[in-house]
Image (cartoon, rainbow over all chains, first blue to last red):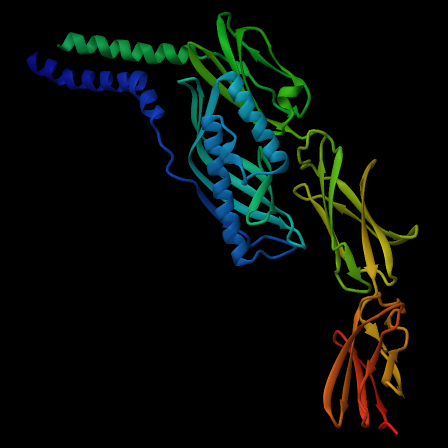
Length: 180
Length: 288
């Protein structure tokens, strides 16, 4: 009888610990989740009609990573400053709208643990515009004030248009689609 | 101790169970189009908070579960991935996509703005259809490209968009002058102009005569191989070889002809070139 009671104790303890962790501690841990940096990989072997030069590939990877880092900062802190230089045109327009809308509603969003697989699907003959497909994986957190209302790892497919600027490639269009 | 742990275990499990059961059921649109109204149906009867998070939008509003949540057209202007979240005790979320509306604009990039005639694959154009909210239209569209000069059709092709882009590349025409490049999609038309200029000179020929001030050389009217007048300002280089050595003079074409004066008292051989094109050679005797 005593053995039986002793045998039941660890089971109850484990169940209680797991349940309490689920109810109490996991959301708190999520609040402190930190981004580990944006990972970007580029595949340009299907690019056409123009081939992508090595230097251009490196530039795209560098500038796309910078753009997503900037966007994540802007939408987490609800400020436009980080967006300068990384976005242009329609992409910049909807990011401005997003920040303004978040400021109004009190929401913020976080893009954590980002990894992007970029495939170049079109590179204009004169090299003045490039279309890419991005299979993005990240953890999306949405907060209302200090309360996390959504926290989920997601895979999102983006159609991206980039154009060369004075010293970098900028994103002009960033449009999520259900599939490629 | 055992009873206390059992109590917490039951509370924990019950809490988890209640949390799961309290999740509200709702249905997002299966398909939505940019700028069009949509609705989300919910079940239940309690109060809740509805959130809409998407490209360009972040909304929060109180709702009564069981009623439909209307999504305004201005909240769905941007095509992309949207997240609907309903919180009532716990939060549940569903995502849905908004696709671009019908094409309303055709962005058209053409290169170059100035091109020599009869150059292979020298003119290219890229067209992107966008809807009225500036979303890239990814459904297949037929874009027609045309090159016209003085209302005469030089070239045309119909191209289906792939991944939201249609493009062409073609040889420049044979005659110098402005060429209109048009991309059209249904009623949408976008025009760009390309200036075709003469290509490299062809059959470059010079004549020369000695005068009291030296040798005066001039080209015949400079044309390209298609007969187009080479534009004024094009540089022609005259090279004189004589007893005094080698000398060169660069002269721009003016009104179709380039002229130069060369001071060389002895017998002189003069040749002419423009760019990579060589012309004829003349010999002029010594000054009497």
